[in-house]
Image (cartoon, rainbow, N blue to C red; front, side, top):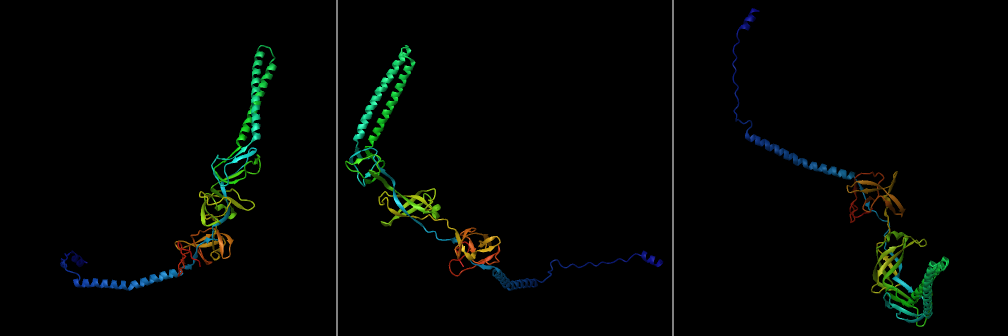
Length: 415
C-alpha cells in the first residue's frame, strides 16, 4: 500500500509529441492524365447508354400508342338530312287589273255622243259619253219653279208674322193668332228647304248625263251607241275601264305551304304564250284564314306591266322559290337505339368523344325516320351504334378510302 502511494506521488515522465507532417498545399491528389481519361470514360458510357436506350423508349411509346389506338372503338358517322327535298312551289293563277271598274248610267236618257272606243287610253275625269235627258230637264225646270213658289210663300209668311207681332203689342189680335202666324212662317221655311234640296238632287243627277272616267286606264269594253236609250239602274254597263300598268295575280296556296308564303316574298311568273319569258312578281298580301272547302290560302301578288306585254285575264303559272315548308330532319333507322329513357343517338364531338342525345321521332319512312328534335344537320351521328355505347367514351372515326370523309366538321358520310 505505501509503495503504491509513493508511486503516485512521483512525478510522471514528460511525453514528447512528434509534430505531424502536412502534405504540400499544391500537391495534386490525382494525376492530370488520369482525371481526363476518367471524364472521357464517363461521357462515353453516357452516350452509349443514351444510344442504346432511345430505340427502346421509342418502341415502347409506339407500342403504347398502338395499344391505345387499338383499344378505341371505330365508328362510322353520318349527318341528318331533310326528310324529303323541298321542291319549289308552282301554282296556277289569273292575271287581273290592278284597278277595274264598270261604268253604269245614273240617269235616264239617250246617247248623244261617245268620245272613246275599245282599247283607248283615258285619263281620270275624261269625257267618255254624253246623254240627252229631256225628261230630267223638264223635271228640273218644274222643281226650280216650285222652289221659287216656296221662296215667295216663305217671304209672305215671314212678313205676316212680323205684322201680327205689332198687332199683338197693340192688343188688336190675340197672342194665339200671332203664334199661328209664326208657326206658318217656320213651315214655309221648311218647304223652301225641301224644294231647294230637290233642285240640288236633280242638278247632281243631270251631271251624270256626262259620263266621265273615274281613273286613268284603258277602255276594255264599250256597250253603247248613238241614240241608244239608257236607263238608270240597268244591269248592263256602258263602259269597262281597267288600269293595266300593274297587274294582280291571285293564287291558292295549299295548307302545307301556307306558313311559308309571306309578303314581300319574290316570285317568278310565266304565261303559256310567252314560254321563253319570265316576269318578276312579289307577294303583296295574303288572307288571314284558309278556305274551309279547299284548305288553301288566298295570296295576292303584283307584277309590273308597264310595257303592256301581259293581258289581264290571262292564265299564269307562279313559282314561289322561297316558299318551302318546314321539313324535319331524317336519319337512317340503324342510327337510332332505344333504352329506358327513350330513343337515343350517339353524336361524336370535336374531341372524338360520344354524347348520347335523346331525340323525338316523327314518321317512320322505312329506311329513314323523321327526327323532330334533339339533333341538328351539323351533328356527326354514329351510323350503327353498338348496344354497349356509353356517354363520354372516346371513339375513332372510320376513315374511308374515297372522298366524303364523315368527320365532325367535314362532309357527311353514311355507312
